[in-house]
Image 1 (tube, one colour):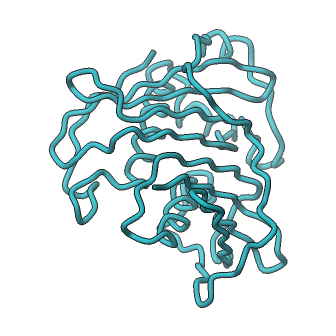
Image 2: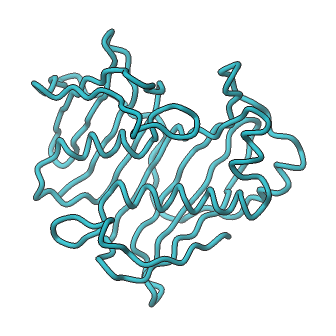
Image 3: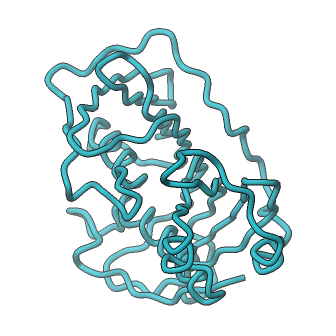
Length: 237
């Protein structure tokens, strides 16, 4: 298990002083990146091979959001590696050891030039030794689309350079941030599920659709032809 100790910064909180959702996602991503660096399998290694890690799914359970100035410990570990896929779990605890956030994710290693999955070499698999996954009830990685989604009038986003990561695609945290921005500001989020289907690239236009069923709100991000970039599902109060 790899641990990242940090303190919630002013630049990472919302109007109420709580850690923002996008900052939360970034903490998880940063923790996994630093673990890869510690194993000498980080950004420089995959870049030299023309590879990149892509997240295909998130499921995030939020028990309590840390606040400005709180000391936190972000932890991550691989759970299983199967061919080109890596299941990775995360948690965020406060300095007393109280569990604030738990998350499961699925990653895929891609050849950036060929745009196809890459099987991890055996020494890479051995470095990412799997451990027991988080307990509790977790849902499958596929998210069924609601049938009554409605396009959000006037809410089309164009992918700008600031949205891009080192793979030259929109960073996965921005999909969630775009979707979060559609929710009423007073909504408290307890769970986030995301299924990424297509990468958004520079200058792409993202059309936003929404549907709400009781405590579940589903935001679907589509391209000009209707193909889905990502499905983001929030469970709220």
